[in-house]
Length: 124
Image (tube, rainbow, N blue to C red; front, top):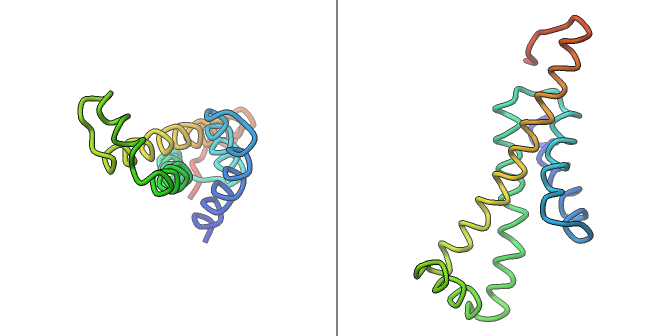
């Protein structure tokens, strides 16, 4: 249940933040969510990867639909004849890795704070 709640926080807060802030703020959203929900670093990374990937894929897909894939085809030519679908997948991967690394950092920060307090156990 906490996994789903962390994903919902990333999706909800991330959607708002992406409308008003630069692309890299998704790492901050992932870090906040992972710091709030005490999870292992790998689990936090995976939740951030999924959440960030979804948040970057949906707007890219909608923009691709609006212009009938013309822009994706032209950008694909610049990157060595990438197909529009592969370009959308690459966009989702970059967003997912950015958010996932932020979540990893937030989880590691939470662990370090607990370690300095004397409680150095990993979360369950």
